[in-house]
Amino acid sequence: MSNCKCHEKDVFMPIECEIVHVEQVTDTEKYYTLLPSDPSVMEFEPGQILEVSLFGYGEIPIGYASSPTRKKTFDIVVRSVGRVSTAINNLKQGDSLFVRGPLGTGFPLDDLRDNNILIVAGGIGLCPTRSLIKYILDRRNEFKKFSLFFGARSPSEQLFLQDLAHWRRSNDVDYFETVDKADASWQGNVGVITTLFDQAQIDPDTKVIVCGPPVMYKFVIQKLLDIGVTEDSIYLDLERRMKCGIGKCGHCQINDRYTCVDGAVFSFSEIKHLGEAFDDEPWRSLHALISPL
Image (cartoon, rainbow, N blue to C red):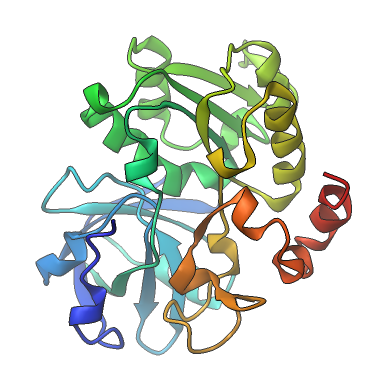
């Protein structure tokens, strides 16, 4: 059951956060550590969303990239893709930005506990799943076998390099990684993320979190079903569809469901038969592929 208390406060009122650390981690992404002026922002669960704003520019939905087991500050990653995100990424340490949240329902922790876990994260999908990865590692005894797949387009687009180095050495997670295109420095696997299934032993009784570019979902789901993972054990993060975060604008509506209120995490069995779940670009190509399943 969610501990979210967003219904107890004004969800339209942004909360000021001080940037206590900022780092350019790729050509397009910046990593922020934020200190909120209101501690309610820290009462979140892995997978929940914030609306991040800058006065005069607007707001964008972004997932927490740190675990709620850390109490005073939290992390986000912002990719420069538009007017708002570009303006945010011009901020410096000591500046302020604003957030609303936490919003949405996050990952189903009650279903995940006492089970084998696999997280499949592609590209910037590592950001919201990092919140869950850190949570599991901080409470390792609450979960069984923990496997993590991470795929990036190239080594230079990998995020959280210190985390990746730690996970490669860790005995608490079976970590597998790949890049679509290698450079001279890369010694690891080359290929799409589904090639990692050939290297790992994934049991059918595994709970799976999938987050990444839409094109990835169909092929990952097919691999999981081939292994024998049940449809209600596959959870898809659809936060890319979100807009206002509170079910008012209708931008993220899927039939009678709102991604921002009822999700952004859904089981595959929950949305498989909702036609609108995969009707819009960039999900349309996925719908065409997923229909025969």
